[in-house]
Structure formats: structure tokens, C-alpha cells
Amino acid sequence: MEEHLTVGRVAELAGVSVRTLHHYDEIGLVRPSMRTAAGYRAYSAGDVERLREVLVYRRLGFGLREIADLVGDPSTDAVAHLHRLRGLLLERREHTDAMIAAIDRELEARAKGVMVGPEDQLKTFGAQLYDAIGGAYTATRRTDPRIAAQIWDGLGDAQTVLNVGAGTGSYEPSDREVTAVEPSAVMRAQRPAGSAPCVAAAAERLPFADQSFDAAMAVSTVHHWRDPICGLREMRRVARRVVVLTFDACEPGWQDRFWLTRDYLPEFGDLLADFPSLAAMAEPIGAIAEPVPIPWDCTDGLFEAYWRRPRAYLQDHVRRAVSTWTRVGPEAEHRAVRSLSDDLASGRWAARNGDLTGLDMADLGLRLLIA
Ligand SMILES: C[S@@+](CC[C@H](N)C(=O)[O-])C[C@H]1O[C@@H](n2cnc3c(N)ncnc32)[C@H](O)[C@@H]1O
Image 1 (cartoon, rainbow, N blue to C red):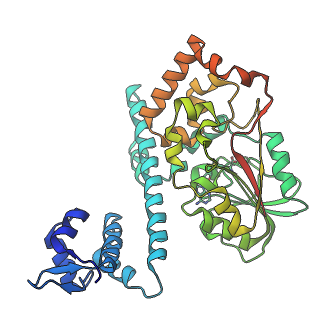
Image 2: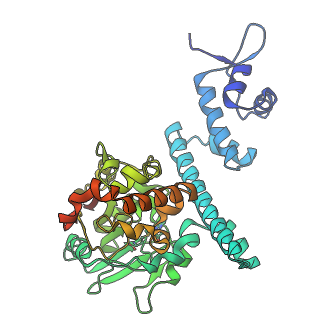
Image 3: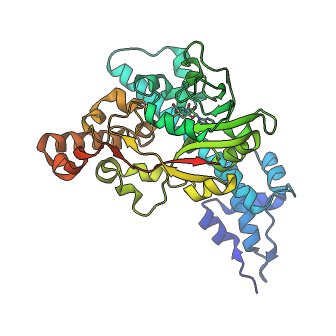
């Protein structure tokens, strides 16, 4: 016989009151499918699954009526609900990161005696991550010609190119007709005059008809998407060719590839815990993956760019242009920087990483997906 849980046990496990569960039963939101001999409500695995969906939607701020419509939708099964909930939670996390980043900046400003105006204070609450941190992007982030050559090679003979998550326009080829897509107003505002036209949209819902472009490209952005697989499918839908610069976070021991994550910032691994594997991203668009080595003097200040120039990570403007440093939080950031600074001063970093000085390029997990 199928195992049932009593109402008291379900309440205890879920961290809600028995009264709440009674209420959900009374309004028909989560009806336990059985009663015990003594007349107590008893929940089956299916009832618990539905309750879990209700509770996550509730925590995300949905009203009970809205939730009833969502969980009662006959066209949505449990897996579809899990995907939707996961996407909503990631969006929430991105918002939280953005608010923390904006609050940190205000604290910093106040510590210097600068008052933040009312408009800027309110912006915090509507902020997406790049609306909060994007202002620092152009200090170090720009096209690296060697990485660009590999991306442009991947585009083949495409004449019309869609650049998704385009940011300020790095890696947009000047000899093709480019259309950019970028959701952050702060990033769009920093696109240089004369750069490709830019549409405010997100990868998961590209406002273009099927096969509108010869190629679609996306550079250093997929890890920010609410639903990477959905975004990649969208790119495949609107373009005949797809080229994506992303990161392989699945190879065993990948956290040890780069001394920064291995010895100073292991929290980087947590940020990518939910990120799909390279194979999971390649499969739905039929892509092959090729390594993208990072030159020792990389001109794009991405997270791994300074693998042979460790002192760069001690500079605030270098870190502010890379979202990782904001997302790990100020405590981890300060600890990592302090520890790196100590090791550089004591010679410990050099003793551990001396072999890097002889290398011109390093494979630190960047991959180009080409489909
Ligand atoms: C690290 S920047 C990369 C920008 C640019 N591609 C480059 O290489 O400089 C990541 C960009 O992805 C954008 N982004 C975040 N979520 C997105 C989404 N769902 N769809 C498209 N772009 C997104 C951010 O606003 C940000 O501009």
C-alpha cells in the first residue's frame, strides 16, 4: 500500500502550521487523498508533490488564487513545474545579488561621506544584476583580438549576426551586419556611438521570427540567463548557425584548473552549481565544443584573464567589472583578496604557481560551442 504521511508530520517537514494545511484543504488547493481510521488527514506522495509546488510559489510571493491556477493547469506536469520554479528562483537570486551589490555601493559611498540620492536608492529595488554593477564594466572589459578571431572564425561566412547578451558590444564583428540583444538598460547605455542597433530583450524570448539571421552569437553571458537551455534553443530557432562562448564547469576537478578558484575563491564553484554541463548545453543545439585558451596578456578583463598577472586581482576596478566578485559577497571577496595579497608578498603564490610564467596561453575551461 502507498505510504501516507499524517498532517502533523507534513506540517513539521514543510515548516508550516497544521492550520495552514487545513486551510489549503478547505479551499481545495492541496486535498490529502486519504483519511486515517481516526479521521486525520493523510498525504500521499502525489499530495506532497503538489504541496511542495504550492509552498515554493507561495515563497516566491504568488497569491493563493494565482497558485491554484498554476498548479491546476492540466497542460503542466511536475517536471514543467520544477523547471518553472527553478527559473523563478534563479531570477530571485539574481535580484538579490543586484540588491546586495547596490547596498554595498551605497554603504561604500556613505563611508566616504557621499549621500546617495532618493532616485538611486529606489533603483536598487528594480535592479537586475547588470543594472546594479554594469557601470563598472567598461573599465577593463573589451574585445581580446585572439579570442575574437576564434569567435569570428566560428561564425563562418554569416553576413547577418545576432549578438545575444551583447553588453557594451565587445566581440561584435565590424564586417558583418550585427543586431544586438541586451536586457540591461545600463549596459545598453554604454554601447559606443555608431555600434550595432540593440534590442531590449532576453535570450529566453528573442523577438525575431524563425531563421531571421545567418548566425547568432553569445559571449560570456549564458551563465547569467534564467534558463540557459531555453535561451540556446531560441538562438537555434532564430539563426542557422550558433556560436557561444561559455564555461565547462563539469570536468572532474575543474575548480583546481585555476589557482584563483582553487586557493582563494572556492565560492566560485557554488555559483556554478546549477549551471548546465557543457554536454547539456551542446546537445539541444547540436553543437561541438572547442577550447578557448586565454592569452597571458588577455585584453578582456574576464574572471580568468589575469591568470599570469595575479596582482591585477588586488585592484578594485578589475574585480568590479566581473560579476563573480559581487555574487560571492563582500566577505568572500575580502578574504580572497587579503589572502592573495599576503601570498604575493610572502612569495607563496610564486612558489605554488611558478610554472605559469613560462606559458603564453592557458586552458582554464572556456569553451566555444559551435552549431
Ligand atoms: C559578462 S556580460 C557579457 C557582455 C558581452 N557579451 C561581452 O562579451 O562583453 C553578460 C551580459 O549578459 C546580459 N544578460 C543577463 N541576463 C540575460 C538574459 N537572460 N538574456 C540575455 N542577456 C542577458 C547581462 O545584462 C550582461 O550584459
